[in-house]
Length: 240
Image (tube, rainbow, N blue to C red; front, side, top):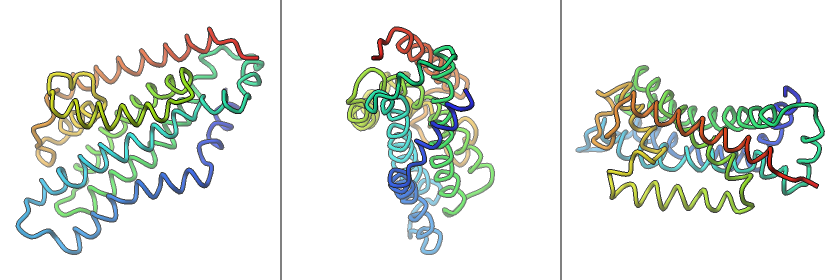
């Protein structure tokens, strides 16, 4: 398992892909620096940080883009490169392949996404340690949930990346944004509700219809379900 984890980390850290993802993550940080130097006039700074920097950029863009790119490649590239056979030959159970892959994608994605969120909240006007910790906690929940879903998707189809982006920008951004009742089925809103639950003063938006316990429970169900589906899929696959 340790060998699979190390190999997976090296795959996640391919320079070209990593530079692109770091650039995406740096956008809200750069905007927070500009806002700190030149505060927006006539703006509620807390609302500016939440409604301009965190919610549309970090939570709705950086988090899903980074994690979808990494997790769909985690097992998907093994199939495309026809190296899955070598993993199957190792004397480890199927879950011993899935968990290191999930861990590698979650760690690399988590460092990038949480780093972006923490720096954005810390640098932006009216930032605080509590605010940054709340952002880190909520984004960690989002990273783990998205990783579990799209690692499974990478096994199911070679078009997982495209489908993941459609899910993020059609379902999460458009449909869920208009139909509040389906936020129970939105990773983005589990993330927002967790941040809101950890710091309801600095993140006092009206989008979090779930409380902290509900968000964590829903995210936990998603993670367990899709990890189990990934292991089941791997057990039933025939790899030449």
